[in-house]
Image 1 (tube, rainbow, N blue to C red):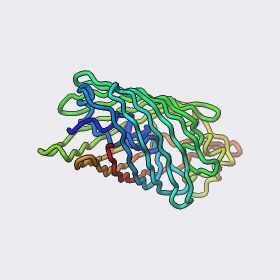
Image 2 (image 1 turned 120 degrees about the vertical axis):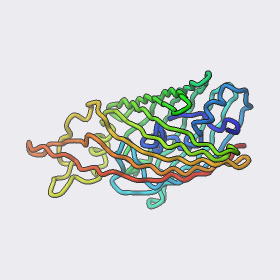
Image 3 (image 1 turned 90 degrees about the horizontal axis):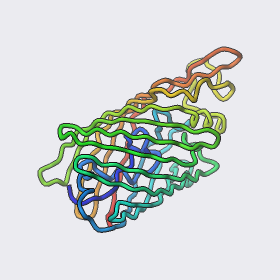
Length: 293
C-alpha cells in the first residue's frame, strides 16, 4: 500500500484492537490499514496527519451509553520517522452539543518482516456531564502484536485501563483477511474479534451516572442494587467488522460497519434477589476522512 499513514494502535481503539473497543478511544488509528503495517520497516519521512470521523454511537466491549448518541471525532497526530508518534483528539456529542472527552496519546510502533508491534499511552479528560460508557476511565496503556500469515492476519492486544477507583485488564484477539485492489487504492479487511476483560469500568459508570442500557422487563433498576463480580475476567464481546479504506493522493477514507455481540452480562442484587442486565447486540458505523500533511 502507499506509504505509512498511521501507526496501528488497537482500543481504542477504536480500537478497533478491534472496533469493539478502539472506537471509544483513538479513532485516528483506524485509518491505518493492516496491510500498511508491512511498510513500517521501510524508511519514511516524518509527517503530520489530521482527520475527522463520525461514530453512530459509543460501544465498548459490547457495552454502550445509556442513551444512544452519535459523535464527531477530530484529531491530529505527528508521526516521527523513528516510529514515535503523539497526538490529540476529542469527541463532540451531537445531541448534547458539547465536547465529551479530550484525549492525548503517545506511543511507539515498529515492524520486522511479517511482525509489527505497538505500545501506547492515552490520557482521558472527560466532561463531568458526559454519559459516555467509559467516562470513569482516566488513562490506558495498550500493547499490540500483529503477524501476517499471508492468508490471514492475527492480532493480539492487551490494554490496562486505569479507572477512577479500580482498573480493568482487557485482552483481545482478531483474525482478518486483506482484499486489495490492483491499483492498491482500495482495501477491504473483514475481521472477527474476541474480547476478554473485567468490567469495573461499567460498575463505576452505573454507580456514578445511574443509567444503563436496560434491566429487562419488570426488573428493578441496577442503580438501586449491588453489582456482583464486576472484577471477574470473562469473555466480554464478539464482533464482526468489514472496514473499507480508499486512498486518493494525500487523502484516505474509511467506512467501518461493526456488529457486536455482548457476552456475560453483569449481574446485580436487589433485596437479596439476583438479576441480570439485558444488553442487546449492536450494529454501529464509523465514517471518516484523513489528510496527510
